[in-house]
Length: 629
Ligand SMILES: Nc1nc2c(ncn2[C@@H]2O[C@H](COP(=O)(O)OP(=O)(O)OP(=O)(O)O)[C@@H](O)[C@H]2O)c(=O)[nH]1
Image: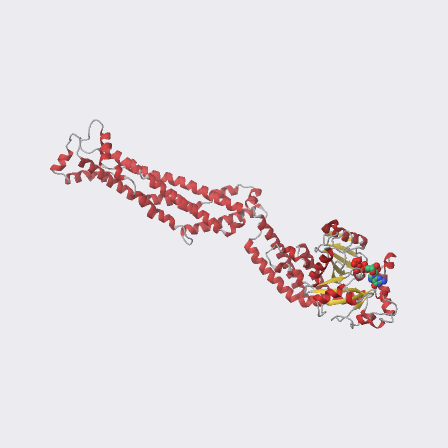
């Protein structure tokens, strides 16, 4: 493969890929909804040098293209026939090999019949534009493989026109101009401006447009058709020799088949020969013969296109590299695509769970805030709640008297009211259930809040709203289970205190009574009309109160231990354990449902990854071409 082939072939392949991505020069605005003004995406096409064929109606545009190809294959007819850009990629094949054509939109079909090619161009045009005869910027890609071509890519654009024909909307004149302009405006576009020789060059639509977008004429190739149709005694030497309208590149004169030739179906290869003969024998143009004609034009363009591509390669490469960087970072932001097989999906789900779990742990253990609020429950809320318990009321003299008397029954106690003590203590200890359960709830809410926060902070989960919700639900369910367990445990702690009292405490009591004894004490112990004196009940009340105080101190220490053991430690170690078990039982379909993504996001990533593939393939191709040089 020669350098020339590989360079033009390289650009051809990138162009085809661009079209498949919906990235083509004339339609950048159609991509506007993607990426919010990210121009790198639509500018690869623009960065690629191309040759656009422009000319007014009946200027001979189709004839020039067919002559360059050596085949007639373009739709003919009155009115505006070319209504979509035709990207015509010519590939030279070995002498004697069979000619064929291929459309990008019909990748499996080889056309050897060029009448069928013409039909397909027509049909494919109608497929996109509908029968309304509108125009569309979406190009048709046609590759022609033939020994009779040079490697060259041309873009055939709708002919510039002044009036819409019947059945076509008025706006079409304007639309065509806009579309052609978007192509020829691009600094990398080589303009093949076709004008008929039998018309004043100053009035040529092609030259007018070219002059506007390329005033210095450095990327315009002027082509003059219909030299044979000029009035007798006149010639186009003023134009061809660059005197009437100067361009950087020399003008090329052309003689195409006349309408009569077309009607007679004159073969293109014969027409080429006739054209050569015309110039060779022309008295006016004989001295220019080697630089005239469609075959010369094709070679000239091919060589020029190749040199332009070569010069552009460094900037194309840097554009591609820049785009790849941008796309990679966009992909990182969007997250990588999810695997399709169940095993990989399960792995992904577990990874995401672990990412969440890690953040949750950081909240508990420090590094992230929130875990300290659990200590706040133990250090403030619980002691405050314990202090507020209504023991004053419960152990008031009146209540003590009532409970002790009821416990004694018909016979008042002799020494110490054993039953009365027990009932008073039991009644008091019951009050501890409240603060114990409240501590459990308070810690539960802290944990729940930390789950909520951690879910929000797990960036990786944002992509997967379904999984995110499932993890949140599973975590909260687990927390509920831990809470139930924790409540049972703290209630047990309280019940244990009532079920067996600390005997030592009471063994010390009689001595205290003796110490506090004396005649007053004896009097107090002696039954009165009211059975006992007030002091007696007060003492019982204060004894019970100090016993309850002792228990309160114990519970202030043991409740936090139970809560941490049942809730905090469990949350840290096995928050998602149950969820993992459920995951293990899920079918492939259910797993992929968990990885259901936000559709907009999915679409965006798909676009992004397709582009990334295109750009990477383009980079590889350019690398291989650069090595070949
Ligand atoms: N004698 C002669 N006739 C030509 C030449 N070039 C084009 N024609 C004739 O001019 C007419 C228009 O040529 P086309 O090649 O169809 O021109 P076009 O610019 O593609 O026209 P539209 O597609 O209708 O805009 C046809 O009848 C051609 O035979 C030429 O160099 N010599």
